[in-house]
Image (cartoon, rainbow, N blue to C red):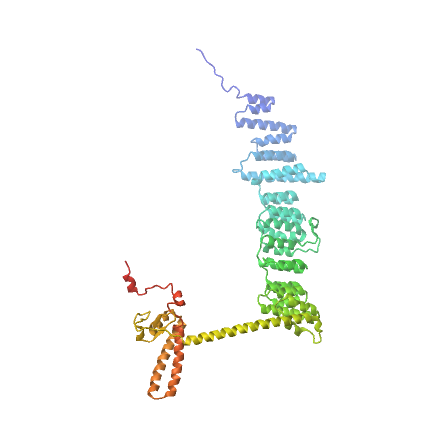
Length: 585
């Protein structure tokens, strides 16, 4: 019998041989199952532990399946915090983030406690923080953010007094409110503003801006101006912060201001109004109040003369009046079109300003009245007759006779002799012009009288065969109207046709006239039968007046040649519906 021997898995016990010889790397290399590797790690860790190499031992214990409680107690009894930290970190790397989240959170909290204790002890010994250890701790927080409990970790770091690490941790979880609050408590206003800019919540700006505006107004305003481009903030909501600003005290950022004495609140509001075109009256009103409070008179006047401003004029007037800003009040009165008040007030501060406002009204009567008020002021208050006379050349509305009543009774005529002579020459020219106009008017009146006389004698011919241009019946059968254009119409035909073009009031008056004429005719016949000739004359006069008014209404122009034909161009030729239907195809 022949046997053939096959060699399989010859090296299955090789890892044990290397393990016995202490060649752990080779033993781990030849391991084929997790259990074999686990045995190598435990054996190797025990050896390192017995030799006192606790950090190496911790590293391999962390890979093994050795009881967690057993290993941690080993290192805790020996007070080996570095080894314990190494073990916990190695164990943490083996845990699944989704399935073993609770275990990861517990281990992370323990590691943080160890880091904090080591940091505090090193700082107590060396009087300065261990920067390398700090960086390692910060990296641990960042890498394991998802496994940390915010509340537990925050309280833990806070209890150890690690402010910089606490702020980093809060920022890591986007808790900028805590970060900004702590920076302000530590008077690190620059860092507080930097943190404020890193987030996008307008509520935090509104909450902390009052404090920042009080201590670092320049930096705060710069931050607002940056956010103004993104329209994150509502300027109206920042007014409480602006009210905390006091330009008369020293601020932590005064050294950063290039223009000394520049009001930061005014700088911001000016940009918002003219740079961002803000039209909120609240913003405009508050800027005016700042101009008034801080005596920024030039800026106030410049603002009041701008066109794109939306301030409450009554509020601004009341405020400027209370603070004695007379010139500003003049501009506000002018903006309200109260030119009389503007001139009256301007005469107290600036004559040129009064003149400027006197020229603004479109109404010549009002403008002349204002100029007279200025002239009276110049003559009676300033006693300057020459300046008053100069107004005659500056204003075309004023004449010498308008200004003379303001002069004292014993004023020398030499001061304004030339003006009087000039005025008299103007009057002579005016009189001559009026004479020419009167002559023209007289000639025109004579021509009109002549035309009227000719019209009375004007006549026309109507043949016995001529027909009414409306009804096409012989015109001599009834009373008729003959026009200069030779069109002729029966009275009733013309009345009926013209009635269509009368307005409601005229139609009503037309009906009344017809009734009154009919009534007068009847009364005339009655009086004729009673042989009362005086009453008949009166009735005839009344009848003539009524007929004259009726003629003016219906026969003032030819219906075919006058304006009525032009106005009725849009009227259809045929209005009878039956006739219209006959034309249908």
